[in-house]
Structure formats: structure tokens, C-alpha cells
Length: 364
Length: 222
Image (cartoon, rainbow over all chains, first blue to last red):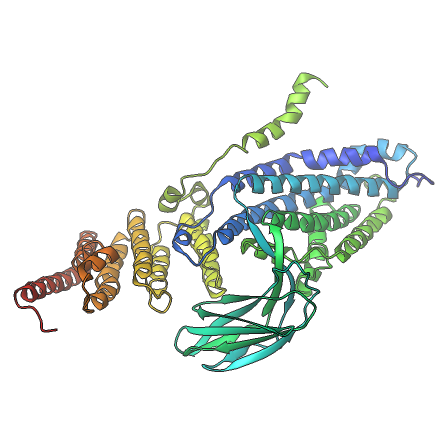
């Protein structure tokens, strides 16, 4: 098959065809059906109903996270497998009419990728609807905007304290901003203790103390403004406490309904699927569909794990987002840079596919 | 497109729409008798349950108790026959959540202990070592529950009896009576240590009743 010359980069007919195939595939629909069933089940553990310390929002978040985990575990592999096998299916019989029309290989691949990505987005949206329809209650919940880690795990002996300065994003006048500190009981002396958190910000001082029995987050309100935040944590009890190194302090503000958590997961999953789908589609021009899907998954997963889930990688912070949804909170807003990296990763995959489509048929 | 072709195309979506009808399985029964997934997994279920117990422990360390209990309950659904899982969760609810270090208030401690004991009672019906679970219930009742009630009983207050009854139906005697019943069940299931435990607890209950009788006859000086 020879390359064709100029023409539109996107052919809507091809995109629509691939959208129907992605959204209507038997394997994918079966996965969606299981997701819908999983969303209807009440996953609240009976022991948690006794726990007054667990807010209802946390239990709702846990149910939401469970349903989304099932959705991602089923739909992501199904869609990526479908994307990886597209060129293999073309070479089994559709190459004749695909290659006959005056369009370039790039046009065919880009249009197919767009159709596949939109189909994946629609499936993720259906999963989000299934998850939210089964949850009638939803309240306003805070959204995380920034986190601050300390250099190393820090022990607080009885009576000891530590002071940390935290940089803050601009805090709007509407208020509702909070800083929360993660504190854990550590070995030595009593099994529990009492922690006091004092926040100095813009001339104001806010205090809160709480008993620490297990890993605990103590939240303190912040005044509006751009002033830096100085946070003092002191051990007021007889046990030993500690501040973990990762995400020790977190800044949050009222973020809206808990249902926005599903939107956060949906957008990140859609970016990840667009990127991995592009890779799988491209690799499928060189290897079998299943191999292409596995390779694409690895190429996406390795940087995501190695770089500890960066927000700029497509779907890189999906795990952290799911974890925060499970706590009944909202994750940081989606990094706009992730759209650019999605396009770059998918573009790289499609370029590999264009090179591999020198022949529309299997070598004889 | 013919009608038959349209129906074939639309049938998968129809199935999806039907599944939007509210559905939830009887979860208590699932935990007690094993979910359909557990029966399907067979011996792999116990391996999957082991993974869930590790994740239960990790969630507890992360302070996410609700997540830990969800994983524990899924582990029990996957492998309801093994007694270790029931004992692990029961022990956590009674000795950790019901401890004075975790809960400051006696009524909340009793609530956790009751939850743990009820869990062990449910497990007794499905596990392959019911004697172990019955013995564990007796031990927790005779020592952990009785310890809390004894501390309350030792405080001189006007509404002591009513408060003890509020904390546990029947107060200390009620708890010891439940312990005796549990040890009797353990003995019936053939547990080797049940008889000695039953004998000792019956003696303790008799001593407690005798002490109360003497107190009623000759009140102790305040």
C-alpha cells in the first residue's frame, strides 16, 4: 500500500467507527456490567458502623474507591487490549478498503486513536455514572491544594516539639483553608499520647490538640492571605509521637461535592487511556495485539512508579487520587501539563505505528 | 439494519441497563457462609484471603481502620472456614479497639468487645474449628470484659448496678454466665482446655455470688 498525499489529518468516519467498536466491544461491555454490579453492592464494613471516629464521608469515600478500583482494574486492561489488537484486525481483512481510499497512514492512525480515546472516555463516564448513581448521599468535602514533606521521619519525645515553615499557594478571601498534620504514635513509653498543633499565620495564632491513638491527622483552620505558615507540633502526653517524612503537612480548602472525586478519577483515567491506547495502537503495527497491550502498559507504568506518581504524567497520580477519594476528600486539581504529556506519549506511539504500517498485510 | 440485527447490537446495552436496578447481596450471610466468589475460587480463596490479611495489617498501620475492616471482611468472605481469620479480627476488635488505650469511655469499650464477640459467635457456625472460637469467646468474656466491669464495680457510686447493667446485660454475673456458656460449647466441640476453663470460671462466678450475698448481709464500711 502506498502512502497517500495531503488530506485532512482526522477522518470523522474512521473515528466514529472506532468509537462504536471501542464502546460496543463484548469484552468491554462485560467489564462495564461487572463494574455496575460492583457499584450496587454495599461495601461498608459492619465494624466501621460502630466507629464514631470514622466520618460518614469516609465510609462513602471507601465505597466509591472500591467501586472505582474494580472499574479501573476491569476496564483499563479491556480497553488497552482492544487498542493493541486494532491493527492486527485490520491486517486480517480490512486493509483492502482501508488502504484503497485516498488517506495517509497518519490520518488512519490518528482518526482511529481519537475514536478509541473518545470511546474509552465514554466508558469511563458510564462507570462514573454507575458509581455515583448508587451513592445518594454526598456532602461538601475539602480539596487538597498542596503538600509539604519534611526531610526525614521525626520523633517527638514527651514534651518535645518541632517548628516547620510551610509555603502556601494564594489563599482566597472566601476562607475555609485548613492545614492538616499527620502524626503517628511511635515506640517508647505510653502507647498513646496527646499532640498540640499551633499555627502562626499573618499575625494570627490558631491551636488544636487531639489524642493520638493511631495515625492521626489534626486539622487547623487558616486565615485567608498569602502569608507563610509556621506550624508548631508539640507532644503533650506521656507517649512518643512521630511525624512521617512524606506529605507531613497538607493544605486544603472547600472543594465542592464528594462526587467531584469521581470526576477527578475519570479525567486522570481518560488521560492514561489516551496515552496507553496510542502506545498500544502503535506497537500493534509491529507485534501481536496482546504483546502490544502489555508493552504499552509497561511503558506507561514504569515511569509512573519510578517517578513516584508525578502529576504531569498521564494518570501518574491516579493511585493517590483514588486514595484521597477513599478518605472522602478531593485530590489536587489535574495538572494541565498532563494533557501535553498525554499528547506527546500518544504521538510517540502513533509515530511508531506509522513506521510499522509500511505494509497493510502480514509478511508472506 | 434488520430488527434482529438491531436487537443483537442493543442487547449488551440492555443487560447493562438492567444491572442498574438496585442490587446488593446479603452481606452478613456472605461473610458467614462464603461468597459465590469464594466458592468459585476454591483453594485459591485461602491464598487470596492471606493477601487480604496482610493488606488489613497495612491499613491498620496507616491508620485507615475502615479500610482495614473492609479488607478483613473480604478475607473472611474468601476463606470463612479457617479459624485464624475470625480470631485475628475478633482479637483486634476486643483487645485493641476495646482497650483503655484506644477508647476512653467504658460504654464504647463494651461496644467494641460486643462486636468482637458477636463476630466470633458467627464464625463458630462456619469454621472448621468451632471449639477454638468458642474458647476464645469464653476467655475474652471471663477476663477482658470482666476486667472492665470489675473496675466499675470497685468504684463506690450510687447507680453502680444500673450502670453495670447498662455496660453489659446482667453486669459481671451476666458476663461470667456468657463465658460459662461459651466454655460449655467449646467442651461440646471437644476442645481439650475447655473443661478446665469451665471449671475455673464457674468457681469464680460462685465466689462472686457468695461475696455479693455476704455484702448484702453485712455491708462493708464506707
